[in-house]
Image (cartoon, rainbow, N blue to C red; front, side, top):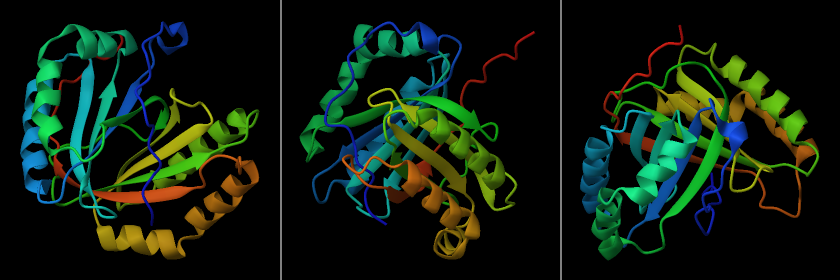
Length: 240
């Protein structure tokens, strides 16, 4: 395993009509100073509790990397791209979040914004300490994005049939549309590691990803996180 590459800057807001009615994902990474691992857990827990009031944010899951214990991830899902940026830039309490984080950050906060292309269903909640999330990063060659979408959506359907898998989805980055992220939640770390090392399904995926890859961009990477806070969130009403 190695750390998944992260953007070095936030994307600036711009209207994206194509995102209307589509779910957006956010992978917010903060790398903290040595000794601040427990402090950032408290801060991320507070952030989750406060952000629960946002009615278009449907998932908030805080976790820590098994590759680098100073790397903490806040995974979010939103049903409204426009509201996310309104929350980020127009509401003052988000500035408070940064004031909490800045004294313990070793590097600037990094966030990957994505369109969620396909999912096995609803993200689980209240599985903290008993579940692990996986991020798998792939950069594809320009012009191969449609092939990548098809490949990853088929893969997600396969993963969803595994009884040890709690959730899986695939994201296409809004920071860089050539970047795809597979996100999975598993109930058992041992099974996840065994599946990665021996599983035919993942070996086949790696082989096909290599055929789509842009070798001028960062190579494939996979990082596993342990979930430590994931309360139940607001549930969007079903379409009539």
